[in-house]
Image (cartoon, rainbow, N blue to C red; front, side, top):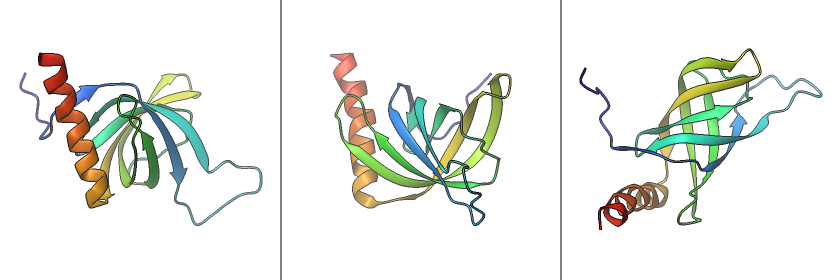
Length: 120
């Protein structure tokens, strides 16, 4: 089966802070969640999280790239969500919809620099 992804994707665990962009904030309900990436590409990320995400929702991301220790910020749209452990932990695919030019260059350098480093 051919992979339909457009972007090179690397399996990597990075820290990511997911901030829900919601108009309704209920007292006592968290809107910020600390999560981990499972893989990352220039087009988006797959994360493991306890955040109650829904497909189509938009979130703010603050990603710390583990190898370079650089931080990038982005807005992403949740494309899909699936339960990993009951209704406690989820895996979600997020597509970047707002990535600042500097963040995009940092991410490209991180992804393709890693491929070059591992091939040497």
